[in-house]
Length: 279
Image 1 (tube, rainbow, N blue to C red):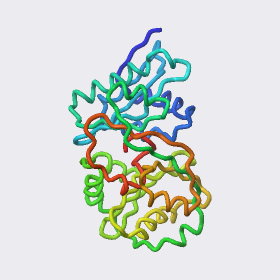
Image 2: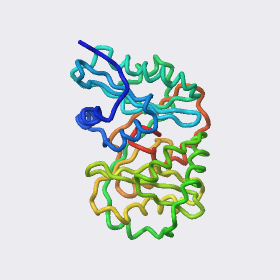
Image 3: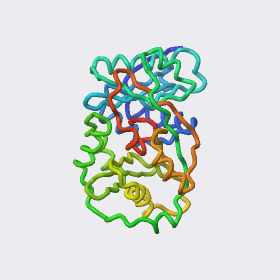
């Protein structure tokens, strides 16, 4: 094989998206373009005679970074290609001197990541459900102009890192809902026929407000539309809300960290920002 690892380009995205869709991922071209735009030297593909057969992306914040969209075409698995791609990403992030590197791992891939110093932190559950009319009726949330700087401040407190690029870019690409006094943030967008929720974050003891923030998203979502989100398993309030509206767990991953884990407020992180890609 004529294997080569190089930087990811716009021309590679259709082939990468095709691999992702074959795996059942919730991905779209906009997400991949965002990776390239904000971190062009941290996104890589593996090619065989110019055919894209693997990919991996990274996204850097102030102190930390994420690895996501790590995939190798099924035909080429078991040949060490994934390990080479992963090593390339780790080498890049080590040069950036990030204190923590995060990823969401499939259970069968934990062994590979552990060899590179990643440790298990928590389980992350993929919840799925449908929008129903009763959700729209419950919502009494006061409409307000989104305050992105307050959202960034909230997100920074919960994650113990400043993630300006991520939150500001998602706020441009997604619909935004906020709670009074900016205690909460929720964004949602569309990938094909699926509505994805994230980030969904809420700080405070007002459980009703956290729930209203969730159901407020459905004022513009067609009834019976499919909805998906990734939720830290330790957040029992998110679990209660989702179960109340007949959402169910359809899959799980392991959130892993390389480096000293800060005191992240997982009990106030109701849904990660994207479907397993950037926290």
